[in-house]
Image (cartoon, rainbow, N blue to C red):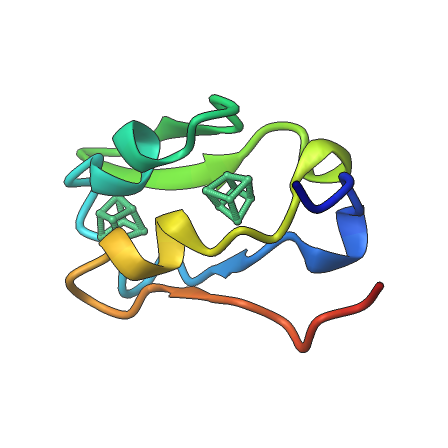
Length: 73
Ligand code: SF4
Ligand code: SF4
């Protein structure tokens, strides 16, 4: 398993995010939650320092609202 490294945490674009929650379910470490913003919800990463950069959340997003940074060992 890749050790946690906050540098590998993905970026979420709240403008693209529909709040569907697929990334929330995909993250085995439970690092992603939905945050309310007015009438909308969007995903946020609560503990980016614990992210392993596994990209399960990125793969689960149907809207390409999550982007993985270049891998940083
Ligand atoms: S890259 Fe992996 S560990 Fe990091 S937030 Fe996404 S699913 Fe969770
Ligand atoms: S899977 Fe994509 S669209 Fe759905 S909540 Fe996560 S970032 Fe937003």
